[in-house]
Length: 217
Image 1 (cartoon, one colour):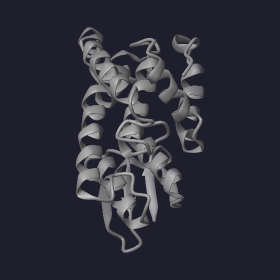
Image 2: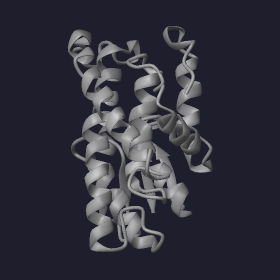
Image 3: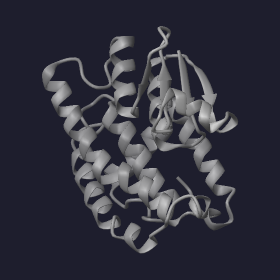
Image 4: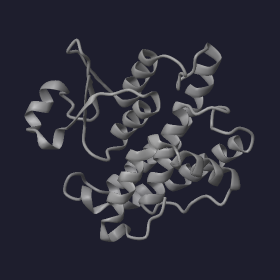
């Protein structure tokens, strides 16, 4: 398999983290080092990631890629092994996506200088996403008061999505770290996992930008 990415793209990191959790390997290709037109032949939308199967078929959309790889690699299933688990994990993954992951991506797009000139930035609009994120954090903190991870006592896809969103929002200066003890315990447990290496690398990259020297995730 080949996984096409750009470094530190949140959707690409979501796939990379899942693959590390599941012990999966693929040839990772940085599409910033290729001609853009060449990549468009693989994915006409031009977005990352894209997964090229051994058959030559191309699968795009990070969540779909993660679900495919999870099913392909067998248990433990990060999207659930029973209908009940899949429903519970799917519910929390969606909450994390809407409440943390998407706000983090959009806040970065609309406030960070690296995207200036690439998109039309609206920083004031980005700030309107913060209350949604804070509400999601309180919801997740209430949940991890009762369970080790978001959808239960084992890591799931919901934790990966939530971690990328939560730490991304902190890194971009949108929110401070939560003062909830359960949220801090969960955050430390997530960042201690070897699979979080892509997130640590992204943090190191962002710390290298003058505007974000003080971030700590």
